[in-house]
Image 1 (cartoon, helix red, strand yellow):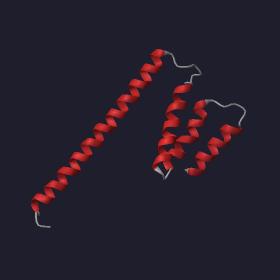
Image 2 (cartoon, rainbow, N blue to C red):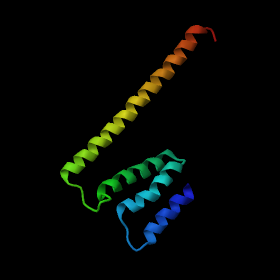
Image 3 (cartoon, rainbow, N blue to C red):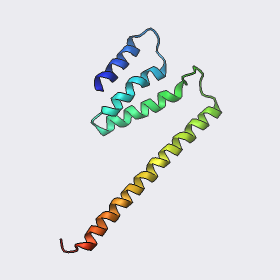
Image 4 (cartoon, rainbow, N blue to C red):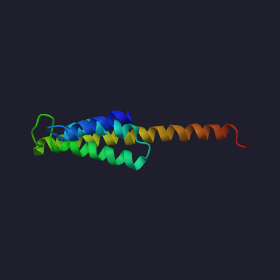
Length: 105
């Protein structure tokens, strides 16, 4: 996957035309296989930013599209936070139940 990302970015950079979403095609696989958390976060932020610069239909964002995109992004982040909290709570309950059954271990 790392090689795929590098090749896609290279094709875009050395190609005759560069559109922001072309770069995203290469950054997504790179972000998926990045082993360092800071690198993964930077690549994810770059993907999100480039996706908002110019839309695939070639038009720039107008205020209505920007509001819709930001709302969708916030809903997605909220869903991940809620899911993470639910998983953390379930893990905590499982650990607490195991401790309650065997308090001296």
